[in-house]
Length: 381
Image (cartoon, rainbow, N blue to C red):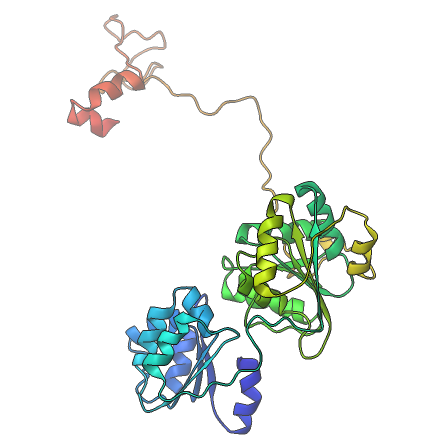
């Protein structure tokens, strides 16, 4: 959003700043104190700075809420409500979203006066330039081979997983296999997300593995293939994920990998999304997979992959075992008994005190059992 606004703002001599979490607050606070005209923010960080008295919203003329339904789905509705309540009621308010549902209706009824609705297309309408494929794979082993094959093409491709752990693991596996890939998910810092997205957008790497964090609000030109490594939980996510390709009149392909036990759920999802993609059985090496992949890219050795590519953490070298099991515990001697070897007290190595009487020694375990009863012994322990 900022990249789109900045050229226009510069021409109008307006100052723009970004207020987001995951990065230091200090530069953001400095920008606010210098004065800004346009703020692009996430609800959490904006509320945080507002509660600290670093930002006021009582003089805002225009409030824009993007991806309004997604905010509601993620549980940001209470925060968004508080933010909108802090802006002047007479100001202009706009809500943008690919889908509008009941969560957004609450905001519309409370904060918008006589709103005008502009609709480009139905929320469930698939893009005509987008081709959908549902590939039925036999098991997880074959699925992994197929994923690697589809990722090995020359064009940009975006692979979606359900979990952050899967995204991280798959991206690192691809890089290790000679297919440099970046990861994008909620466990990364804001700086790490931006580095990975920049490397993908600039063509340093051709493959991005992401969770649904990349399904909305991110535009990268010329993504020719979207792969649902796991079918999403519901049809809206399918449409948003798939919408990363076939943008601005371009064509694109969407592939969903379906295990046998997922087939029924996918068919339900496809009906809700109003797409026609009957599952077809494939195996590694199938000609259809080669066609969908396109021309293969040259493999890149992991050590030669771009810096932004995901990598496994290097293993920490452990020292060679010397046969020793660690330091041994010497018997604990009560105060006044003295060590076994000869010292200032005049004792000798035989364990005899100068008087010839056997020296009294106790092990750490014996002493520990008495430590609860003797304060002085507890201190010694």
